[in-house]
Image (cartoon, rainbow over all chains, first blue to last red; front, side):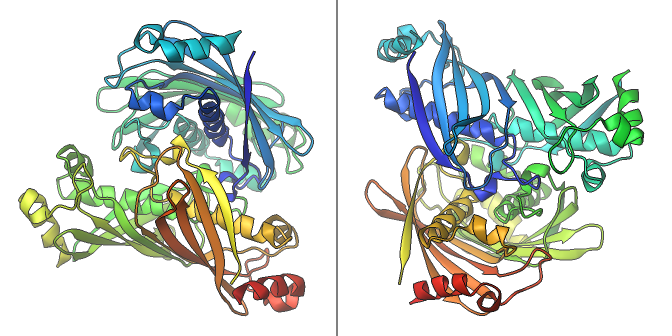
Length: 138
Length: 138
Length: 138
Length: 138
């Protein structure tokens, strides 16, 4: 199964008064992972949107294992867990680069929709993208 | 089962280029609901932290049903789903005030820990809070 | 000069590891103040955008006086400082409700532009809004 | 004058329904630039905080020239504009990597304070940092 690593460094803005990264920000990191995943396929999410296909979330989940801290170097590892006619599920691991500790893992499920937010069969409306994604599932 | 409603109005900052609220922000709304839930018990989460007990998340989940939009009036309905010795799970509903449409629902699980992030039995270290919370479970 | 007060309660997400509100979030609060200012005129910023007029910022400034903290009740007081043909400047005060301490003050300048981001004379393209705004300047 | 370039890629979370980066997020980018500036001196802001010196803002300012968009590669160029006994002012340029267009510029002023938020003379309490910073002014 194809995976893609994205890299970020924790921003001060991402911490909260607990002294660690605010839990909601892991979902932004998942999004960074997802954007880089598309990019690595040679077809950015930006292009996909420009062609009128957007990927709103239907579900998101995160398990928090160890806290990320300010200025930590973070790896976000992204893969496709499931791909169906009108849905796609990504899986993520958030890893601290220094010691490769797993800080969090999660997943997000998305619908393929057009600009009017109507579900579309990605296989029909954009076969190229479908094929690129399908190869990553296995 | 006791529930508490919190009210917010969608901020421009919370939208993204899809023209709707960015998915990660629902977790901030859950937190608003949770803060107001504690407040309604006569014991704020702020006080709890000042007494050295914090509630980091171990898991979070959200299901997105309909998108929230800029300037929508939103109700966040919060309840306790489960309360164990060192864990608590909150459930949330995000409701559009105008037509009472359910936009999203979710849950978060938290550990009771001290400032050194060691798990604590809330029943032992703060019986008053334990009793307040237990009454809400049912 | 007409002013409008908006009210918010500080969210945990808005704090950082300094234990106070992250400085960037005051700009979001200014935006909340601005949105409520428009609303109080009987013409929401949402409507303005729907008519094809948007107000991107050309400048923003904030002076930080005392830190806001989690769960503080905050008043955001908004007024119009200047209104020219294609520009508008808002002024803001961020006040802690408990003791009416001034926590921060600032201003933002915006251009009136259409959806293609071309400057428009608001007086010409939407006289009603122009008149509503002009009354607030003095 | 010493300057340091930091690099980021625009996140979807950073956009708003105008289709461009939300204005408040430029201040987070300034913070990223500042963190990397310290890091380039061989003395991270994290270390500075661990030694009990923090740098809360007293003022911030941004001029918006051209909008940044999702997935743009961005350079944040940071320098020290002024360094006094208890204050430091940083200057920033936000540059689009693709065509080196200047998207925004700004500055932030900070006080040197201890954990009790009392102003400290950085020259006295941490001479090494003072010397590192002073060299950058000119």
